[in-house]
Image (cartoon, rainbow, N blue to C red; front, side):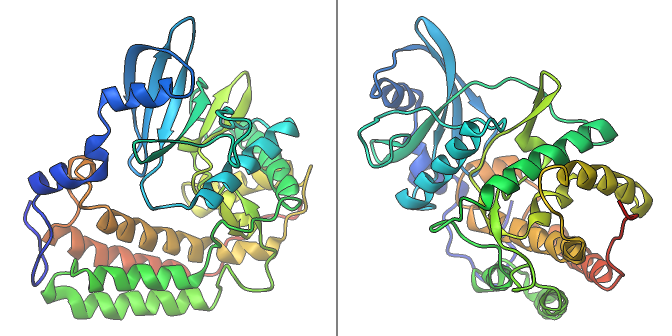
Length: 347
């Protein structure tokens, strides 16, 4: 795949494969990291779907396999990772179905985080399950109940080191595609114009406004991060936990036309309010948050494009056709931002 901008100084895919830090993360390194914690591998390794980090199921001698997550170098500080881990343990101690990391060194400042050959990693128990059925109203009701419990607990665990959801981040994501020369020259003016309009529309309803309570959130609460088991949702992967309004953990569970979304929302909020108050004013944030997620996703792909896993997993990205379609997507987002916010019947 060729690059589409005015000039490119990035390495070729072959050069990136040789120079990227994850290239050093061979099966031998994975086993050595696990065994450095006093666990003994039976050499069975299964790579799991993960792009931001590298995640493996590793078999152990005389024990159940474990899940090992190697954090992307230089993404989070030790304090931020430790706060993520402490948050999941805090929720687990309150009998909320999350999957916290295992203790590696009880005497360490961060007992659930280890380092091997320059890679920070955590070990988790293996958790089976399937994705929730988002067209199942009972599943949505239960999801609302447990997210309500997470948020009620999160109010008592304010983040000090994790990031906050903000309009500023979206502006930085828009700027990055221009500064890193990803946008083709022939549509740069159109991109500047439509992305600017989208940002202005988000600024009319910013999620970091003082009118919305900023609480500790899962942050990336879509169906792929929920495992349904024993008639109960289990929440995994708090890697993107952050501070923000409660609706951030709810809106990604909605799908379909407006009528369908309203039915789904009613079930979610009914469950949610069993354990935590829901501010209906936050419904005004659904479309701004949707737009912010799209802006983040494209900048995320661009920032990771030198990781050889990304061109393989997202071969359609960074082509002339893709960027032309992205302009159309931004126009659709702007149209959504200009529509009245979603509402739901009184509970």
